[in-house]
Length: 151
Image (cartoon, rainbow, N blue to C red; front, side, top):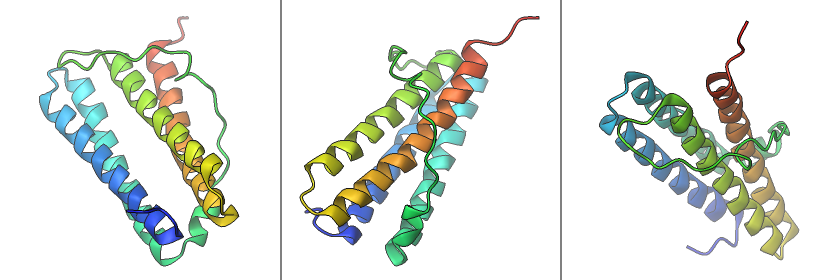
């Protein structure tokens, strides 16, 4: 599918959300650690919500432009990507998820930079911002789980 118009961009983004949903749902099914199973199960449901948002954007692409600009803590960039395993720890599960969101941010930013049309470039930047919001949320969870305060 050539991404030369807003509708095709949003449909491609919906496909990416469906793939992310399937990945997280499949991983959740295989996990042995109940906490990790719950993390991936929740992530799969989050991806369905993202898909629904993008489906609404197909009808009104202006809703994507109204997304807030999230902070970028760059925790994902400073964290190694753990290997997926059925007995991974919650912090590793969150690290894996935030790395995936980082990849999505970079994907859309790359498309924005290569777009020759300003409107399409702006849509890609908006999608990158949406993914950055997901990444920031996961980074916050990762810091809470991976670096709990000790009193």
